Image (cartoon, rainbow, N blue to C red; front, top):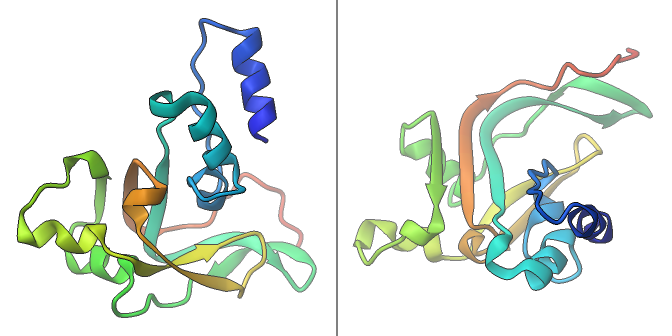
Length: 153
């Protein structure tokens, strides 16, 4: 995936790219596209993780692509749980804005977060420091499944 992005940029030297992908593809974890892009483009690679509290989502379940999957409740102590407790239903936060305010320290800790992928009912819980994986996060308290596919139920 990172080779494809690099090819586009190499063949269009005056261009910029906005790439929308799953959190796990864009994060700066070793072996993932985001880590390769960060290594190749350094400060010119800016990634944003997307998080939600409650949601329906589109994923495969029982061998079919379905848009009626329900996100499991977040766990106390997770990033999603903490984001929800801010009572701010929609926000963007750039980790470069972290400061020494004691109320910000939890954003620099390793906490659990959900990693929901292409398979429904498979919520992977990952413990990490979000500020080391992403430049920023977008939090949307409640989201709905994508409706861009022709779903066969």
